[in-house]
Image (cartoon, rainbow, N blue to C red; front, side):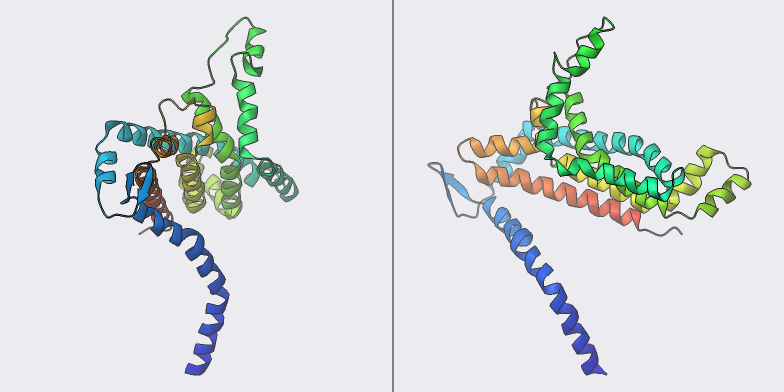
Length: 283
């Protein structure tokens, strides 16, 4: 019996080994090197291995770092709220109001934007949001505008929605479509209105999928460089832009590593907290 179990364990390990090696080579290894690099010294524009905390103290004691940190956190949190609120009605419609065939086609069309480079889509938004762009040209027909939308936080948010909204709709739709429709019908039969049914039946049953979609949105927005740079004007900078600026300033890769580690820690804390809440059972 024990020999049979050991064979099963070896078989399972053989299938897991490629994933373990992949994670070790391309995630854990670079992460360890980046942590070590945050303690390096830079002399004459060259990094030298060392073990000193100067990079951490200088970076974390600067007010502009915390300004960028909380700006990035606020923008990512706002993107999560807007994306969730915009995606939820569309997901409910796809999950409860259309046929299975129509839902499959809708998900297919939501996947199509990922066939195109995110950078190309952001450049397209530059043309649309520009002072003489498509939207302001439409406003001029009614004698209003032009409005400044490019190089603003509004432009950054449009970029975040471009990145996150299709994925959020897909994840929410999968979660909502798995809800037993008889429970929704039972709520209606017991006198629940539409809004009460959504908040007391639909949302609790789809809680895991909704939170997972929000976590993906936060991670993508918090670490995004393209939208705040090309649509937001990079002023004030987010943390991802700060990494680029820091690495270009005197080849300060160790200080850029500090910023990157702070971003990773923040995303891990938010993701683990949210996932823990998503899978927590009700008492």
